[in-house]
Amino acid sequence: MVKYRNILVVINPEEERQIALERAVKVAELDEGAQLTLLLTIYDFSYEMTAMLSVDEREEMRHGVIAQRREWLDEILQPYRARGLECEIKVLWHNRPFECVIQEVLEHRHDLVVKATHKHSFLQTFIFTPTDWHLLRKCPCPVLLVKEGHWQRGGNLIAAINCSSDDKEQKVLNERITREGIAIAELLGASLYLVNTYPGTPVNVAIELPEFDPNAYNDAIRKHHEDLLREHADQFGINHMWTKVAEGLPEEVLPDMADDLNATLMIMGCVGRTGLSAALLGNTAEHVVDRLNCDILILKPDDYSCPVDDRRHPA
Image (cartoon, rainbow, N blue to C red; front, side, top):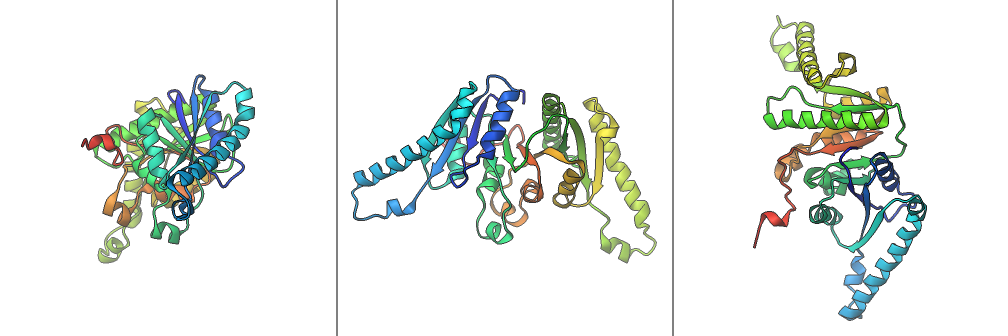
């Protein structure tokens, strides 16, 4: 990845195998000179509620836990450091992991966050927003969410774009996703597919208009999206054989397409919707990541403004 030189790796304290670290090392090896920072956030509410201990004693206990975790990370890093990889360790006491990650990104200008992810249940996402989703919505730099598996040379990558939108911001984001995909495909010796989804024919239209021909309509809509996607591909010199359009919702179509292509990585954009609109509608990337079996790289618009950035609200 051509420009990822300052990578933040989010460590999972509950797992012995750190797949986010493995993937970050792979990225660093692809781009010589990359610096890795391992971030582990820990918090134990019981330490804060121990009335029998003084403030100093509680602080000493926290320092003890942090020191133990640093030793654990030092052991994990030994084989990587032996290979000459530069790694920094940060263990921070923080009760909101996503805020801690974003603050680190803003303060130290990280250009990529790498984090392991897992499937979130509907009930889990309904009651509270998972850390992964917070990062997708609010992290100002690209976020690479990784799952089991390995990156292989000569595999397939997917750049999922939205060609049907007339929004200028979306078009710029499409271009960024495509450029990123081309760069990663070159580094991995992989094939890049440009993919675009489109909605199917509304059922009520076919019912209310007897003379309506849904097949002709579907063919026309598909051709329209194929033309838009190919026009976009032409801007980057991508052969039309590497373009694919599919009917359906992105969260339903994209995971199936990734499985069919045996994709290693999917690259897509996230508008960073927050607040009530996020609660009601969510973001496409959030719904896709839970159904996807491969890694996913999420990019933001160039003019994205981070809602967690305290520097936007000077005192």
